[in-house]
Image (cartoon, rainbow, N blue to C red; front, side, top):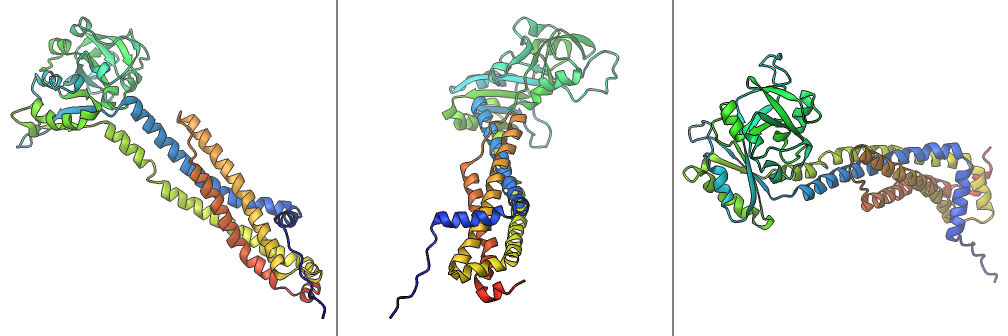
Length: 397
């Protein structure tokens, strides 16, 4: 009795060579099919990378600015009227043990204009505020041009402009003059932006004594900024209302500006799901393109399939060949898409001065997605090719 002939087994190298040969025979179609996969993967990697880069930038900003800043401002009375902070509120805050530094500002009923020729109703959205000498220190701010108020200059008509105020007034450096409350004030300095105190960016800051003397300021602070030891922030936050206004602590509002930046960092991914959905749609379209390419390839290569079958190739080997082609085609698109998505992330982060972050799991997910797409796209064409009988395939003209 003769032994049955056993079919030759294909090694992984053989599978790759056979699959690559099928793709090399149709380069234009391969490029167009892989392009659909690349667009889907690039969209998904880019969306995740840009979102992660934005969040990382905000978190680094939080680390630099600190999360130990608290603000105190007046709320409303029991009758709904606007409350006022006591005039000695700042001194009371500075007496709290864990507090390391504190400062205050007060709203002044005056407008600021570039010249005295501009109508009073045009304010440019700039508020005039009295400011304590420790404000820049407390907010860890920096004077971009000129100097900050000191014990001497805070008594005279001198002003320091926030970053936005200086821009709106057309002043990029210290040395000019602005019209405030019916008199000229010399611009002592211009501040850099203060992410934790955006209201200061839109302000013109004068000393408390000058505000009282020249602008009719009543001396009541309207915002107190304080920094305390990191471990004691929660305790300080709890005692601030009663410390600032022992008689009516309910009229005091305490907030933590860093919470807004933390919330913004968390919200950077709010639309990520939607954009990932769009990327998934593009990836699905690319997968359909791969499947279509493989089906057409089976139809065009019926004689090749029949010849291989007649020479001893099994159904399984034919199936493996076409699955390998589909996976290689998807992998080609996936690799190109991952590189494109990473490049988009790096380029966009560079333009926004963000750190470039492409999470490894995003690249791993891109590889996994391409393998899944390739498997699903190649399954039906591979099974169809394997079902062809040698005689039927060779008889095809």
